[in-house]
Image 1: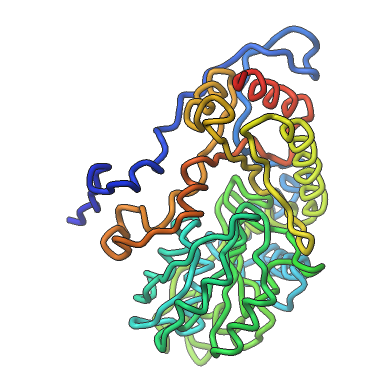
Image 2 (image 1 turned 90 degrees about the vertical axis):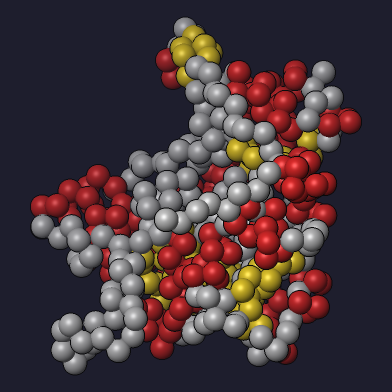
Amino acid sequence: MLQPAELSLEEMGELAAIIPAADPEVRLTYRAIPEFGATPRRSIIPVCAPTLGGNELKYVQQAIETNWISSAGRFIRDFEARFAEACGVEYGIACANGTVAMHLTMATLGLEPGDEVIIPTFTMIATANAVTYCGAKPVLVDMEPAYWQMDINQVEAKITPRTKAIVPVHIYGHPTDMDPLMALAEKHGLLVIEDAAEAHGAEYKGRRTGGLGHAAGFSFYGNKIITTGEGGMVTTNDRDLAQLAWNLRDHAFSHERHFWHKFVGFNYRMTNLQAAIGLAQVEQLDGFVAARRRNALEYNRRLQDIPGVRTPSEAPWAKNVYWMYGILVDEQVYGMNRDALRRVLADHGIETRTFFIPMHAQPVYWQQFKGERYPVAEDLCKRGFYLPSASSLGIDEIEYITDVIRQAGK
């Protein structure tokens, strides 16, 4: 029987200070909701919820009426083509979720035991896990403090003869600085695989994420800007890579004869029902991004003058899509720490999430990275959390959330 990796806070020493408290219980709160008039109603503002206001139901109904509900059907092809076009690339390979999109990309590119892959320590654990699934070893770098992305200046020092790839993660919808990273990869003959799970529609110097490296992986989980409930996509301009990825995601059936396999493939397929939702979602991508950016501007306007609250920055070369709108709390200036503020917000019916816990502080990777320290990532983990960020979030809800933050800090 598989046993969990146990790790106590005492074992972590100084690193224990960055580990967040348990999520507070979000209480139903009476507040006025404009669409229901002035009468207060019990409500919760979720940290994120899907926006399903397009052709989702229509397309799903078509899939059911035509009896194409499994892993074949026109919506899979149409979704792949439309999403690839939205990323400015030639090929999209739909699959079961974002984690397997990353694993499928890495497996297709030939990552294997003994290889090393450089990733940021501050990321969702799926990034490191996808590397581990290949038998390869994640190698960590810290973040740069301005935009909370992989510190490109630290990457070269981590390159060894075993390094095979670099995985920039476009954290919270802001792209990584890709030009110097691609130059470094070319210099050392390395692959660059974008983890774009959180960055649908984000841009780097006018180019969309998903087409900035050799390949990319996206997630369509329920809290992503585009969702299929569960789902993912590999994007690339490499025809051979795309053809092999399509084959590997479907058990690597041979074209010569059925049940004839030349690779160890995977069952990583997306269903036509999910793709029907995805196609309707990608049709609305530009509107979703505009809404996220509008909400971020409103958050910035209302939070920027609150002492001890730092709002996210946007690089001059970037278009941030604010998958999640995150802030940092300076306890000494604001008057309470991040966890205390989250409890106040929860008491007012506002759901939040802490920032990612870095890979070097995860129980499952503790022995592998024991003794390594990454101060920027640790500070982000200790002080950061994100506020409700859905594309459908209303300005009145942002006003309510920011008013609670302003009052709590007095």
